[in-house]
Image (tube, rainbow, N blue to C red; front, side):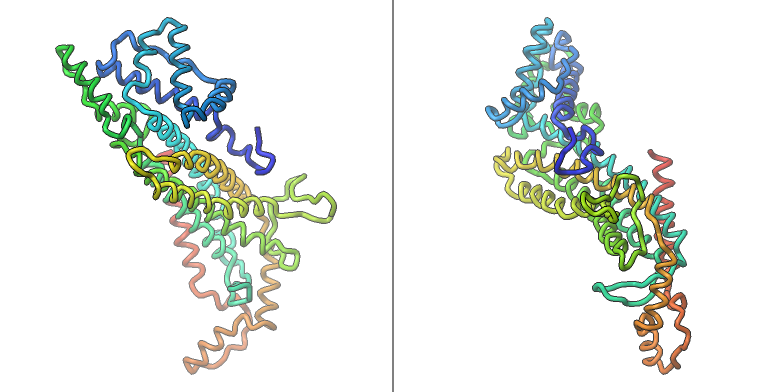
Amino acid sequence: MPDLLWPGDERAGDLLDDTRLLGSMVRIEQAWLDGLVAAGVAPAAAKADLPAVDAADAAGLALGAEGGGNPVVGLVRLLRERLRAAGAADAATWLHRGLTSQDVVDTALVLALVDALDRVDAALGRAADALADLAREHATTVMVGRTLTQHAVPTTFGLKAAGWLRGILGAADEVRRARALLPVQAGGAAGTLSALGELVSLAAAGSAGAAADPLAITDVLADALGLARSVPWHTDRTPITRAGDALGTATQACGRIAADVLTLTRPEIAELGEPADEGRGGSSTMPQKQNPVLSVLVRRAAITTPGLVATLHAAAALADDERPTGSWHAEWATLRDLGRRSVVAVDQTAELVAGLRVHADAMAEQAAHAATTGGLLAERDAVRAVAGAAAIEDLDPSTYLGVADEIVRRVVERADRLRNETRRHP
């Protein structure tokens, strides 16, 4: 159900919810069992379709997870019971053999991160398209440039949109890199694959054909799940922190946009307006208000996600021995909140920039007023004085924009390349 205290949470759907995660765990167990049979480690009679789990199972497994410290212990027990009841005793016997609970939890979380990063990437792409359009359209729309809250020099709204776009494109780069590197986890009890190695040796001794080596079986698992092949990484949490960093970078880029929009929608500035949808932005007591709620909610995520990312790094630094104590467990709910909140924030940002209302007349009016009365062109005059050139009487702010148009062009070209890349490789 939607989160009452995180408005917009429904945009994340079932991402990282209990039933979806348990479904991924079953998928992992299925792929592993299939791999054991295919490699000749488990007998052909062990091949079976594992039973599905539902919301009722998730609730029961959550209640029982305290006993084993994680939900996999109860899940394996439940699956074995159901397999035996269905007459698949061999499958029940061979289920989960060679794996450990961390393998299943880690790989299930990695699969969830694949989904989260893919969804963030898609929303970043929508935001980039909208921002590229804004940058092109408003490449010559003059406005006041502000530094440290004060009027500085003239700029254009196109350049501001290009600056937002650059942050979105950088985030997309990080998201795609992290997504491509997400690995399978299969290491057995202490990351040595000792149980699987023993089973492989026994299978090889009992048959004419040699069974596959243990790492080859983990490669089959990775391929079946669409993940990167990897040796065990039980206490090297770089895959998790890398993905967390990418999600944090995405919300950071969105937060920057939200901060600017919140400033520029203030009534005393009124240079921008959020998308005007009926029922959005109203007040419970003040009928005249049109609150910039999308920007408010995006900024909320930008404020909270760095703490979640920091928790992942702290957990990674405290991963001890061959299987972490407590620090591994601290990642789970942190990743759920980080993944869901990032998806929501980037989706909200894509909607925000796609429907952003640009009040070019207000921008031009404020820029002209600042140029004639507020010294918006004072830097130009100071530079000319240093160079021994005469002052210019023309107070048109559009005459002092540097290479804003060229910067816009280069950033938009980069966005166009990303768009074309995405179309070729969706």
